[in-house]
Length: 393
Ligand SMILES: Nc1nc2c(c(=O)[nH]1)N[C@H]1C(S)=C(S)[C@@H](COP(=O)(O)OP(=O)(O)OC[C@H]3O[C@@H](n4cnc5c(N)ncnc54)[C@H](O)[C@@H]3O)O[C@H]1N2
Ligand code: MOO
Ligand SMILES: [Mg+2]
Image (cartoon, rainbow, N blue to C red; front, side, top):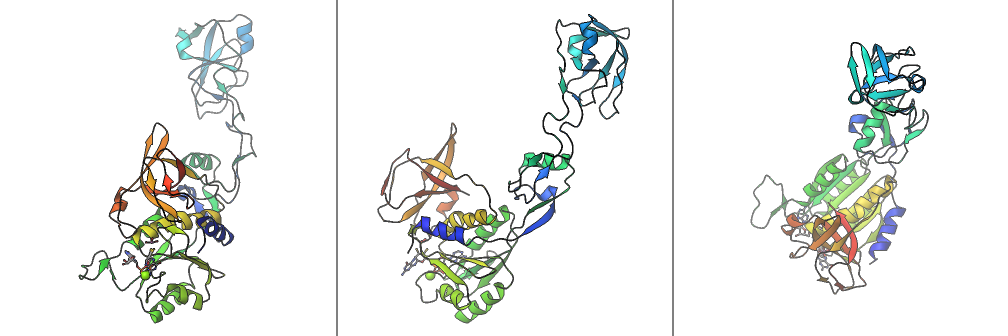
């Protein structure tokens, strides 16, 4: 059995790589950019009026002019005009500042009467209310660097530079497999000795949230069936997430079958609760997580290990989150404890309060949980106010 830290290090060593793909910008938020996005022109691309008003020349102002005949209008979307010295042009926000003009004065600061604009303020400065060409970014500079996870703010940049399609890192194609003779579909009525599947649908929801395509399978607890089905599934998927069948039970065949099928075991069992029997391995094309079947274990193992594998594989820069314990908790075993917690934000601080539940089979208590807090194996008393890593759903 290995420690959590060692398990994570092994996962990092066995990260995947799925190449890249080109997708429409509409689908790009959350994806990892696989090219630099450059400014195709200056930002802004011309001296842009930042206020509605009039455009004048500073040299006229310096000569003492305070009243300017209006010689025309410069609207947004119209080609640049040339200002005749000794006059002004009315100008709208977003318009190109006319040639020879270098000051924009707001309508609030002028009075227009009989075709003449009189300025009502004492001072103006060269360039006022003008957003100069190239000040935000010059043509050719990198606006979004390779490796960045695209955000809402990036959509505006992509479209501004004409990137209707963008190269991103491809995501793994996943298979989700539930195992167990006791499981029936959610729409079915279970017999007294059966239960409805839940883990696989929780995992499916997590993958959907991550934008990962998946197919759901079910395999019964028969060694022949497991061998046949997994043998087939291994041929077409980058990632297999399984739930159940990895512990010590007489029909927990998953670890031995995977190894017989040539999937190399990288570790089996981690010094943690929940999720101790976690199995992780891979062959040249497919990575396999065998999550322990108890619902809280499956979820915790996905949150801690599978997400880490995805982040490593996609070379994402991730900042680990931490939270303060909302109340004292004791855990005597020499295992890392991933405690289910409800989380609230109190004046900018995350407060994680452990949820009372009945162990890793208690999926009802998960309804109150927002994530897991990681309490290290070396300690057994965790005091209110202490800060620990947190994995939020
Ligand atoms: N002798 C030992 N027994 C067990 C140990 C151990 O160390 N020694 N470990 C326990 C721990 S910890 C866990 S966690 C479980 C892991 O069990 P398996 O991964 O082998 O899973 P199963 O035996 O197939 O099922 C366990 C439990 O989970 C339910 N389950 C499974 N799949 C689903 C699903 N898709 N949706 C909902 N529930 C599911 C299943 O019905 C069982 O109740 O082993 C302990 N035993
Ligand atoms: O890992 Mo098991 O999840 O402790 O029940
Ligand atoms: Mg079992």
